[in-house]
Image (tube, rainbow, N blue to C red; front, side):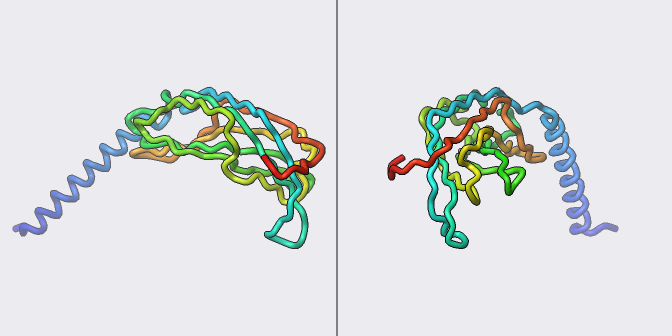
Amino acid sequence: MNTVLSRANSLFAFSLSVMAALTFGCFVTTAFKDRRVPVDIHVSKVMLKNVDDFTGPRERSDLGFLTFDLSSDLQPIFDWNVKQLFLYLSAEYATRSNALNQVVLWDKIVLRGENTKLNLRDVKSKYFFFDDGNGLRANKNITLTLSWNVVPNAGILPLVAGSGHVSLPFPESYETTKSY
């Protein structure tokens, strides 16, 4: 004869199995959805300085400043299985010392229910755009891309790159003014 505890354990295990199956079924309904949307990035100002690098030996490193416009409609990404989006604008470029450099310049969290239409104008980079040397000066191919992580209610955490990027050259000379 089964005791009350063994019956409660069986009921709990069965309920947990049903909940796991339902969660997996919910995940499958949105797992293969294309979460890319068009993104428009426009850079209005680029400035380059050569500053002291306090992280290592007494050397100087390139520090870039960008002012950009960003617009996109993120509404098609949101469905019942999306809690939030973690957006970030990154710069990719190559130098003599590194074949691939990636730097995050700006980020934002968009929660479900918030305004999903991005229309940002004259935004300055949120984080410093440091190079570990002098690889930004006269670099002709620095590519800015808006990407995002979709944070779901159930399932995997996909990393998606927006369908739109911009490549820009950096100046050949350093700015000497103190303002940005």
